[in-house]
Each structure stands twice: as structure tokens, then as C-alpha cells.
Length: 333
Ligand code: PBG
Image (cartoon, rainbow, N blue to C red; front, side, top):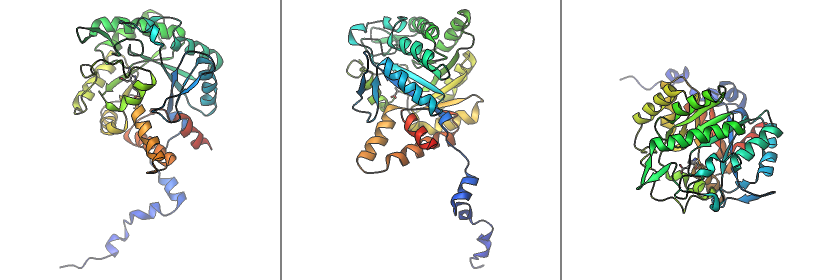
């Protein structure tokens, strides 16, 4: 029997390409830049308000004037787009989320103010009813059932409302069937042919949204769960069908949400479709990394950067992340 021969290994010493900093740089397969990042901002009523979200260390709910300042900072750092999520005052909540179509709601105020102050940055607006409903669901609730087609009608009105206020990207995050097509038709008919639809195509029913529901105040409100419209964590084929349908209906970009527990889904979508793909690193993922750092189990910056480049490796062209400002600062330092 032939003895194990070290010469045999000489041709493939993999560590050669890891030996120095310059060669690691030279052979790096994926890079993260500020242009990959989308920064979600929580909005609150008032003036000069920066209200900490307790379950998301470092994240604040901002009044519109503060959001304008934040938008300038994001733009200076090279972040291409902002997203908005409102914390709606309780007195404005209703059964059918009427505030969603109010042309002067918090999101529309922020869209108008930032479009004026920082016209070069992209503005994305979520479409879903949960920030506006008394029951915390993403649609019209009747006898414990979220009605699909009735909800789509409202989502269409909400989309037009936000496009009119200055949204460049409409992002349906509700998971109703047929909403992408309905929104595309309405936008085109309304003259918004350039408005982009970035659909939450594969959105899972996930416990990782916990801190977000705290941030928008829907936590205690939510009756039951969202498993009749958001996807089952055990499914992967279904994500491909969702993406195929959204592309068919006219989505320009698709989102997978949450991110880190679903990197396999991101990889499969990127392998199977030719469309820009965005991951949403959600509130629970953010909280986990920050609280892990606070507990001393890792360094915040290292965990943040490792988690973000993983999305690029899996095939994303963009990442919605609460770390956007911090990561962009680090990348431009
Ligand atoms: C709902 C919505 C959710 C998030 C964004 N839009 C949560 C939910 O479905 O209850 C979660 C984002 C996050 O956790 O960061 N339209």
C-alpha cells in the first residue's frame, strides 16, 4: 500500500490564498458596500422625537423632522434607499385600517418631507394594513379570517396614496394573493409607470418579527397569528412558486423575509430566477446580534458584518437592515 505522500498535496495547499491580507483581498468572492443597504426607519408622531425601541438596542422611532436628518446622514454614507414603518397613534387605528389611505398619514408626511429635502435617495413604502388595524392583522378581518380580495382593494388604494406622496418603491408585505398584479395595474393607470414594485414574495410566519411588533406597537394588539397568509417555516418549494407568481404579476424586485434563518431560500431563488433579490434582516435578527454582543458572546461589529456578507454570498443584491447606518459607517471609514 502506498504511503501517504505530502508532495501529493503540494498542488492544492488551500491555505496559500489565505496567508496574507492582500491575497485574501485579491481572491475575495463577495463584497459588501453601502450601496447594498436599505435602511428601515420607524416613524412616530411629534417633533424632535427620538424614542428608543427597547427590544432593539440602538434603534429609535423618529418624528418626521428627525427622519429628514437621518435621511441626509444615510445619503451622505452612500445608502441608496430608505424604508418607512409607522407607529400609528392608537386613536387612529381602526377595524379596516383607514389611516393607511389617509394622504396625510405619518408615512406620507415622511415621504413628502424627505423627497423634498433629500431628492437623490430612493424611498420605499411598505404596503400592508397591520400598522393601522385594531386587530394587528395585515388585512380585513372577518370571523377570524383575513379576507383576500377585500384586502387587495385597500392595498391598491394604499399603494396609490403612497406613490402620490413620493414613494419610488411600493413594497407589499401583506402576503395576499394577486396583490402585485392589482397594484401594478393601478399604478400604471394612475400614471405611475416608473414606480417600482418590490414584493415581499417569500415572507414567512416568523417569531423573529417580535421586536418589530413592539416597535410599531402591534404586539399586544395582534389577535391570533398570521399563519393563514404568511408562509410555513418548513417550506421551500412554496417560496419558488410565490416568487414565480410575483414575477409573473409584475414584481421588479423580490424580497425574502426573514433573512438569516432563510439563507437557503435566498440561494434557491437566486439560482432559479433572474431578478434582483433582497433579504430583510428582520428585527429579531438585529436584536439577537446586539444582545449577544451585550452579553459578551461576540463583538457587535464582527457579528454584524459577518451576517451581512452572508446575504451577498447567498445571492442578494440588497439587504434591508437596521444595521444600515452602522455598517455603512464602518465600510466608509
Ligand atoms: C408586516 C410587517 C412585519 C415586518 C415588516 N412588515 C411583521 C409582521 O408580519 O408582523 C417585520 C419586520 C421586522 O421584524 O423587522 N406588514
